[in-house]
Length: 453
Ligand code: ADP
Image (cartoon, rainbow, N blue to C red):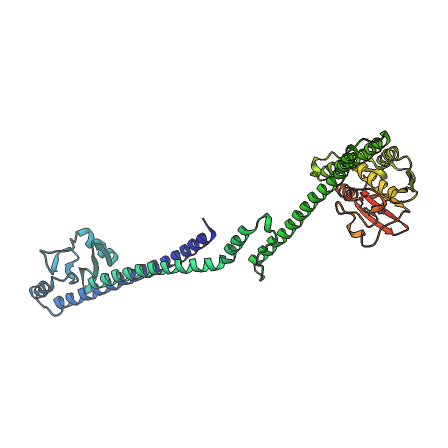
């Protein structure tokens, strides 16, 4: 059920219950009052009749005649007078006899001095009436025609008012709940319009209420989604660009070479170029694979205790094997302490990160040389990758960790712009941090901090 309908029903139900309670209290209290009043009236009229009989000595026949003349009316009370020995002294109409007095009833009246009860619609009162030193028992019965009609009228009025009020409250509640939830339904309509192709749409989020807060939160989520969507698009287009460039170069070279007969040396040259392009492609696909691995859920990556100095030396050997002309110096600033260089990490990924940093240091400097200094401070092992190469501009610094970004100095060395973003991802995965200082013409230093064991 929609919240709007639920609110309407809840509100209407609550008001209906209150109204019902109110109506019930009014009805019951009026009904009791009427009943009590009528018992009093009955008693007074019975006493008047008894006085006529006992004091004014009006003959029973006259009193009965008066009763008979008005007996058509149900509200005419029927009075009976007994002595305490249950002898009937007077009865308005023995043949009609609305109440059958019994000895037991008379005894109960003597005991309680007064009793009241109903027989059908009739109200009956029986009471002890002391008169001139003698106790009489008087019973009187009649129907409160007028009072009951009033009660019925009250019931009808209350019932109609109740129904009208409930319908009215229902309509009002529906109107207000619709008004209150209108921003939500507007929001739903708007959200329905947002698709992958128009992620730039935003919800109206004016005001300070909860709905505006929800809209603002939703808008912020859309911002993030749009950003990551754009980043994904950019990423895919970068990948295809990076793939296309060497492929096009390779095809062009091979086509030209194949277009006519050439000397053997030219074929060899062309094949060497094709191999270089293929190597670039292999490197790119390896980097992308590593990027994908570093993007796994950390719980899926195998972490264990490893020594950073060992990983660093492995990375160094791997680079030197591919580029014997590079020079990589490793300096340990502190005395050997296993714990200070041991981290909980993934050996393969950390090696990839170190290779990228070492390789960058060498390829952006002449002669190609990088020095790594290993030290520790408090809870972190610190590795500084420093080179004295061409450095990079201030403008490039904020962007170098963005995938596929290559700085102004890119003509200086081959690359695909993935290395640093990959290194950052890996270091972050190990709850570490990476920072950079660089000065054009003077060199660059990357500082990696990783929490040690
Ligand atoms: P790639 O090296 O393949 O271009 P990276 O992601 O490793 O990609 O680096 C991004 C950019 O950062 C490089 O293109 C370069 O402009 C700059 N850079 C990284 N390391 C260095 C360095 N040691 N010296 C100078 N510039 C660097």
